[in-house]
Image (cartoon, rainbow, N blue to C red):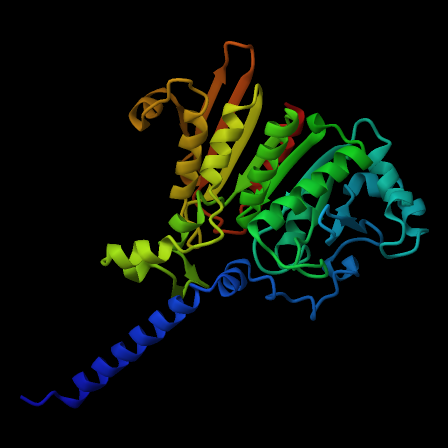
Length: 385
């Protein structure tokens, strides 16, 4: 029986699409190609707007101070220091009188305002994949954080290795080194104590932030004021099972009906970023810890179920015996805010007198990148508590 032309065309269309898909994921077996696709560090708009000129992004003259730091393995990271707006207004004459650009950052008025004020509060912000510190809504985030009522909250952020004007190429170990280098710079050079530092990570940055906080907990028993994770993922293999590039190109989700193939490709993911393991380790080994998870229900890049996984991993780590999901659901505090979303709270006082707080805020709107109000609210509360 002859196949109708319309079915023949449909067959060949599906065959070609399937062939292209398998060719695509086969390419991703190569570690170098995996890193290019996952970190997307070559995708940016620095050619359109110059990050060396923060005024192009709506900041006042020298409200943003450029700086560079060097990592232990020789990479140079390119960063921004964003001043709080009220503090800028109080020191406007001195700030606008300085040359624009990186210069000697540690001799700048901006650095002096951060380092010499015992009331300074610092947000260390780790951005997501692709772009630069000045990409898209990221500048709105810094502006929202620094434009609040407080005249004390500064923001430090850098481009990871391979991003923007930073040297090198991104890897999991490399990005963790970059994050550790920035935090060490803040504590050792600017001499901001960890009790005045909030570490914030967005998307990929949440994995970096968690790894950095874990490092300082295990190596030096350092406890930061708060760790805030926005649109965090539990781990890359789980993320890839549902992730689509730009909401259009699926990675491993078409393989769900074929467990063997799905596991075959998942096991070959080289940059795994097991954040749920690191977060549990951080909580378990801290005397005092304050973790806030923020996720939008309509985040189609990273499903909010990842936030659930992280919440339960962190809460479970507060118990020596361990708890089942059912036990945790019975004990946790849940608050329904209607159209705004809901909050889960886990607050424990340990036998040694330590306190461990795990908070999860799920907002119904905001997507992957735009839960700014909830983020700024959490930062303000963290610095006041």
